[in-house]
Structure formats: structure tokens, C-alpha cells
Image (cartoon, rainbow, N blue to C red):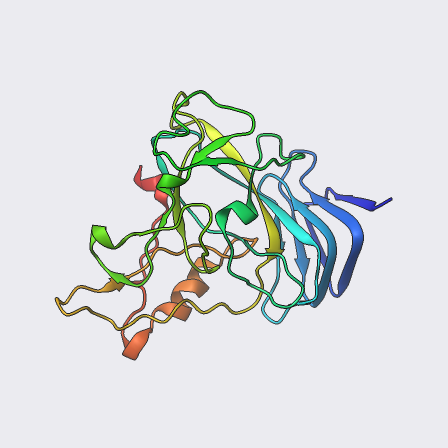
Length: 259
């Protein structure tokens, strides 16, 4: 029988850790907690991050590439099937040979209406597939899953991903909600399940700073880690980009504040 550890402290920290055939659950009591692994992590069991709980892996921490276990992390978006959310995955595809592996949405995303029992999502190709009442399992229209990677600022350059094409872990994507009968303010919980991303991540190299018409190349990205990012450090690390020209402007917008 697998061992079970439920962590109820607001924060817990460890150096080196091996999780073998066991479960570590953060936030099971309804709170949000953090687990910091500052050294080496061999994950052959399961880490379940419920609510807003997070796995913090400081600079220099190591996730064993041979890890065969997985992490689950809750994320919430609008339930409304007519409204977009922007997404990024805190996990890559499970494997025992590499970290930060490219993934398909259907491989890593589960419906988390009950976060203790994530379910496979019912994806459909038609643009109105999820426009009915909320269902179990939840429905998602894969028609609305797109990415925008290193392109000049033209609407026609969005790339169709659906649920079954690969995304790199630094790439963000769009996706609409699970019910046309739900309000924009209604939340759908999802569970990302896979191998936690770790270490330095490099986004696909930009082809240049500007296209032939003088428009900047832009990309849709997001936080690829199972924890919050240090916004100041993210800006400082990226403010000097290709050819000593800013890769980002230094402005940081919180989408909820713009609604």
C-alpha cells in the first residue's frame, strides 16, 4: 500500500528527497501551502498540489530525469464556453529520460471538478462542442486551442494546436470553458498532471527583433513552473534580449485587472 503524507503547514522545506510509491498532498484541508525542495528530488510517486499550493524549486535544485512519478496542480479558469483563457502548463510529458518535455494538452490536462479524482476531458472538434450544459466528464471544444509563437503581430498568424499537437513548455495557448450555460464569473477547476518542469528554460529563438514591415515579433507564453514566478527577476532576466534589444518591455499586466 502506498504511503500518504498530508502537509498542513503553510510552508515546508526539505533538502534532498526521494518520493517512492507514495503521495504528498498539499492543501487537502482547503488551504494553500508550499513545498520547497532546495536540492535533489527523485519523484517516483505523486505530489498533489491542491487549491493554490505550489512546489518551489529554487535555482540550483535538481529533478532527477529518471523520475517516473508525477505532479498534479490545480488551476482555475472561466467555466463559460464563449470566453477565452490564456494557459501554460506547469508540467511536461511524463518520461524517464528527460525533463521539460513537450506535451499535448490532452496528455497533461484533466477535469478537476472534484480535485481529488481528476477525470479525462471530453474533447470535441466542433466550435460549439462545449456550448451546452456542464457535463461530467467536462467538455472542451478543441477548436479554440491556439498558440502564437514568434510571429509578427498579425491575427492570421495564430497556429491551431487542438488537444493533440505538441506544445513546448514555454509556449502558452488559448482555450475556452466547459459550458455555454455558465457565467463568465463561474470557475472551472482543472488539474495539470505530468512531470514538473524544473531548471532553466529557453524559449524558441526569435527570428529577429522586427519583421520586414517593422513590426516586432511577439509570442504568447506563460509561467511554466508549478509555483509562482518572481516578477521582478523575470523582467530583469529578459529586459535585454536579442541583439541587446528588449525581449520584453518591462511592463507586467495582470489580466484580471484589465477585465
